[in-house]
Image 1 (cartoon, rainbow over the protein chains, first blue to last red):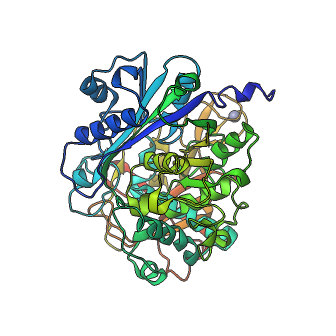
Image 2 (image 1 turned 45 degrees about the horizontal axis):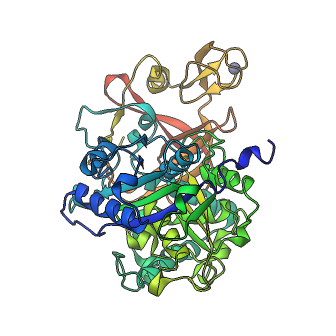
Amino acid sequence: MAKNANRKLARQAAITGIGQSAVGRRLNVDPLGLTADACLEAIADAGLCRDDIDGISTYPGGGIPGAPGFSGAGISDVQDMLRLKVDWFCGGLELPGQLGSVINACMAVATGMARHVLCFRTVWESTAQGTGPRGGIGTGGGGRFRAGGFMQWTLPYGAASAAVWIAMMARRHFHEFGTTREQMAQIALNARRNAGLNPKAIYREPMALDDYLEARMISDPFCLYDCDAPVDGSTALIVSAVDAARDCRKPPLLVEAVGSALRGRPSWDQFDDLTTMALRDASAMLWERTDLKPADVQVAELYDGFSFIAMAWLEALGFCGKGESGPFIEGGNAIALDGEIPLNTQGGQLSAGRLHGFGLLHEAALQLWGEGEQRQVPGGPEVAVAAAGGGPLGGCLLLRRGD
Amino acid sequence: MTEKPFRLLPEVGAENAHFWQGGAEGELRFLRCQACRTYVHPPAPVCPECLSRELSPEAVSGLARLYTYTLNHHSWVPGFDPPYWVAIVEIDEQPGLRLTTNLVGCSPADVKIGMRVRVCFEEREDGIYIPLFEPENS
Ligand SMILES: [Zn+2]
C-alpha cells in the first residue's frame, strides 16, 4: 500500500476533553446518572457546550442480555437524556475491543460525519452482580438451558469466563518462553503501587509479592490479583475533528495512529498464536501507520482485565521482544512511573477498577495534559498509547500532544 | 465409573449433531471438505480453504496433543464443581485443529503441554456425548 494511503486518519482526530464519574464497588446508584456525570464533565473539560456535540459513540451499546451491569447506558439513553441533536452515532459490541468505539469516532470526525463526538462507556457490574462470587458468562439459564453459537464449545466444559480462556493463553506463554508467576505478579504489583497515588482507585492498600503468591487461585496460573475488579463507573471523552479541536479549551491530543486489525481467526481457541492473539495484529497496524516508534512512547495504558493481557500488549506494541515480557517486567522497574515505559499509571483495571478500556484512555489523556497530580509521569510526556481488549478483540490508539 | 458432573449442554441441530452425537459410535467427528480434505471447525457451510460447499462429517483418530491447559479453581457454573482441568488440545490430523475440552483421568504431576492425549466420551441425555480427553497411555 502506498505510504500516504494508509495515513489518511493520521492527526485528523483529537481528544479534546475527558470526564469520569465516581468509581466504586456497589455504589447502588442509577448508572445513567453516572453516565451523565462523566459526559457533562467531558463536554465542559473540552470547553464545549452540549449543542456542540453532533456525534455519539459507545461500546457495547444498550440492551446486552445475560451480562449483568455490562452495559450501563446505550446511545439512545444518553442522546435522550441530554437531548442531543446528532448527525452520526454508533454503538456496538462487534468491534476491535472496547476502544473500537473511539476509533469509530475518529473516523467519523475525519470524514466530516461529525465535528465533536461524545464517546462513553458505563459499567455497573459491581452493583448488578451483587455480593456473590463472580459468575460465568451465560450460565444463568437454568436446567433446560442449551449453549449455542460459540459458547457451545466452552460452556459444557465449565470454561465460562475469559479468566479460563486467557489463563490458558498465559499457560502457553509460560511454556514457550519460560515466563513465571513471579514475573507476571509485577503487573498487579505495579498497578497497586500506582493506585496508591490515585484517590479514585478502589484498591489502594500496599500489596507485596508474598500477598500475590498467597492469594486464592482462580484459574491457574491466575490468582485473584490477576483478575480485574468489577466496579460501577462511567468514563467519557470528546473526539473532535482536528480543525474543530483548535477551538477547544486544552491542547488537542492528536490521534497519530490507530490499530484495529484482526488478521487471524476471531476465536478464543482457534487463533494461530494464542500467546499474542489479536493484540499482535492491532499493534502491527498501528506502527504501519506512523513514523513514531515504540521508543517514542512515554506512557502506556494497556488493558489488564487479566494481568497477562498487559504483558501481551507490551510485547505486541514492541516495548519488549516477543516472549520477553516476563524478564522485561521482572522487578517492576521498567514499568514504574519513573521507568522505561510507565504502565497503567492510575492503577489499571486491577486496582483502579474495571472501567473496561475507557479508564485507560482517560488516564493516557490525563497524563499528556499533565493532570496526573501525585501519579504524574515526570518529564512532561507528549506521546502515549492506550490499548484495550484481549483474545480476539483488540484496538489501540497512539496519542500525541498538539500545541 | 464416577458420578457425572452437572454440565451445561450444547444446543444440537443439523449443523453440529455429527460432533455432539458421534460419541454414540465412539467417534470424534469433524466436517471435512470433500474437495481439498481440510477439516472445518467449528462447522460452517463453506470450506475456508477452497470455498467448496461439499462438506461431510468424517471421524478422526481421537488422538491429540495438549496445547495448553488451566486447573480451574473457581465455580463459574453452579453444579459444575472445581477444581477441574480445562484444556485446549490440537487434533493429530491437522495442525491448528483445536478443541477446548476437559482433561480427565490425570494427576497434576502428569499434565504437561505437549503430552499425548486421546478422546473419551461422557454420555449425557438426548444422545449427546461430550468429548473429553485423557492421557493416551492411561
Ligand atoms: Zn476445501
